[in-house]
Length: 200
Image (cartoon, rainbow, N blue to C red; front, side, top):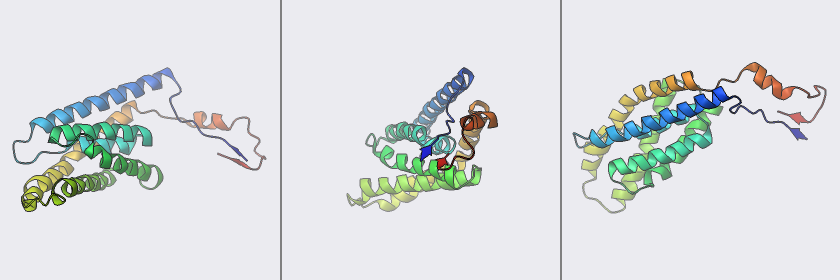
């Protein structure tokens, strides 16, 4: 049985340039989010800009690129919150992979789906932090940690994440790689239409 793979990757210099610019802007957004997250905790809590950004990028990019971006976002999160470097990445990478796979296979790209997936990602990462950093060590102040630190951070992040989503959506719309029907059809040229056992 023969298989053919439709290559939807970068095909022209213009597309390659747009892709590079898009990822440079993603990286700049990550740095800005890290700086804001590190300098904004005027209360006991701080918004998690980098986690929301990682979910937004995974919402519009592929599995591998989304996971790599999530790994860096996890490192930034740990540096901003003073946590163990790489701890958040352990949980953020599979969450962002799940986001990408859902978007590719099951759901549509819209702000409602983004908000509930970001909320789920925030809950997972914060529950893991609560478990491994506080519950296991029998911290007697769990109620203070949950209601004065984690819960306000999650709520404010969900509220702000709409803006992050719109920014990433705009960048993807302006700098994303659009594949035309002709480019997809070029994969099928030279294939015998009567040939059986050929899958695309």
